Image (cartoon, rainbow, N blue to C red; front, side):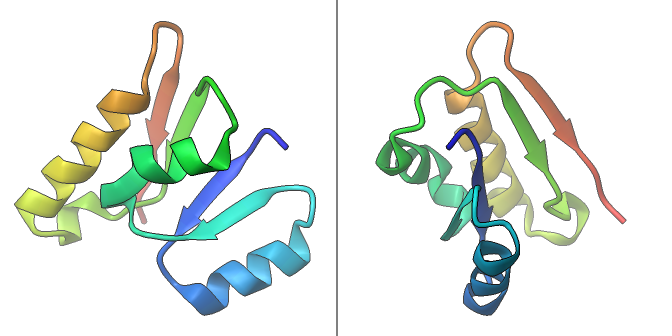
Length: 84
């Protein structure tokens, strides 16, 4: 497996696992992203794609998530985010 999806809603994780059995989904909080990635044993991160609605989060939470993302990024890693 080469994909780790992190979702906070346990019911949605169940649906994602059923719909995309070839991908790895975990229920967790993005403020613990580096720990969740380490447990996945997937290795080096090449891409980070986020659908987190940063503008609706408390500033401290958004900052904490961005720090987690920075910890995972190595040279050549791409980060993309979308919001709607």
